[in-house]
Image 1 (spheres, protein in one colour):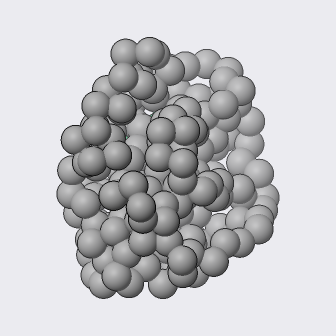
Image 2 (cartoon, rainbow, N blue to C red):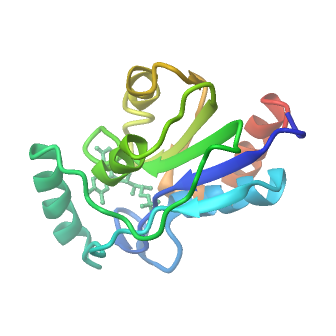
Length: 173
Ligand SMILES: Cc1cc2nc3c(=O)[nH]c(=O)nc-3n(C[C@H](O)[C@H](O)[C@H](O)COP(=O)(O)O)c2cc1C
């Protein structure tokens, strides 16, 4: 797969987070950075137009509202994904789902005929069924069912990064 044009798209939130305290770089971002380093992929970080609150509880409250209203929060910048064959899609689990801002990105792009490789961090929910949800959301894409997930805490360890690399190897990267 090394000759394919690869993009890593991800959303990740720094500042105060569950179990890990105040962090400067989000858990999912650490995985994204490693995938970029390993594969030479291009990168697009989904940056909210209205930044999420720094505090964990405030973020939870806002995310609750966003999910209840099926919101599509806006993000800054944009990327044309046409030239990419393979797209890694990274996100934290929020309320057993993708953060709504990731749905905004999905809505704004045509993923047909692309291979989509999900990866995520969480604090107990695993992938929370999101890999199957993505297959439904992106019916014209080849969504890889064996994505990668680990707790946010693990993503911050050498052992976690090694597991990520083992998974990338298993996919041929
Ligand atoms: C709003 C919100 C909702 C969350 N909901 C869940 C959840 O349903 N299940 C779970 O396992 N973890 C949940 N978490 C924990 C995050 O998935 C976890 O901390 C993740 O590693 C954060 O990644 P990030 O630093 O890349 O944003 C939630 C965190 C937040 C902020």
